[in-house]
Amino acid sequence: MRILVATDAWHPQVNGVVRTLTKLADAAKGLGVEFTFLTPQSFRTFAMPSYRDVRLAMPRPARIAKLIEDARPDSIHIATEGPIGLMVRRYCRQRKLPFTTSFHTRFPEYVRARVPVPGSLIWRALRRFHAPSRAVLAATPALARELTERGFDNVLLWPRGVDTGLFHPRAIDLCLPAPVFLSVGRVAVEKNLEAFLELDLPGTKVIVGDGPARASLEEAYPDAIFLGEKHGEALAEIYAAADVFVFPSKTDTFGLVLLEALASGLPVAAFPVKGPRDVIGDAPVGALDHDLRNACFAALGVSRQDCVEFAASHTWEASARTFVDSIEAVGAGFSGRNGAEPVSFVA
Image (cartoon, rainbow, N blue to C red):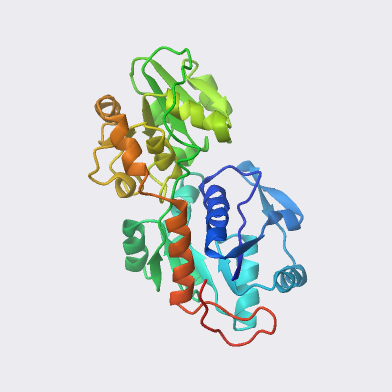
């Protein structure tokens, strides 16, 4: 089976959407499923206002049609609600082809952090975008319930995974005053990093990641260490060397970095909000508290082995199987060769 995924988020961006789609495609190979990605790399792009590191595509309908037809997919999945997602949605609707979508980003909160736009208007636009989808895939039960309550139809659960071959405990010393409190992710206003950086904590605060807020935060918090973007083994070693993973965001739908930290034996300190609450729940692998400082100190006493064992149950193979099964369950397959009616298929 061949699945085409349309996404406005792609390399060289570093975020949860890109990592999720990349890991999904790798894991799906074992199921006999081949992924093709329709990304901004095929189009002219421009820098997104207020976030110049992210470039938005300028797709043309004829180019979109050719790329889809050349890919000869058996199914189409639209991962993002940006220009590419909109254009692929239009292509499918014009040809009466079924498609699925996924909900990765809380755009109402992200937009309101930058400009005073009513959240109700953004939610209305999101509902309209996803309405024709055979299934809207959500990362957690809480997000799935919220989307259903907000009027989204055909919402299905699609959990995430973690690469335990890369992220695992190891003996690493960063040669920094202990304890080391680490945060990993985009350095942007919606990540609420000030809530972490302002805390009175012993040891060292380390930030891994880049983004539009990095320069101002480095200037405002000179005692914190900003390491920029890290990938692969370099990132895994930093996780393993830290003592607590601090996740101050209140807007994430999931937070892949939470699973990466736990797989590395790193307990989590976070606010008790959707995202960390859905990932951790009542498991003894971290501390969720409205007082983030209290959560940080409580996390210091968490068993690192409990964190590792918890993360081991979240695999990308299981995530890929759920993704493929969801497409099959809603009949979102079609013959990309001749535009025939949807057919049933088995991976």
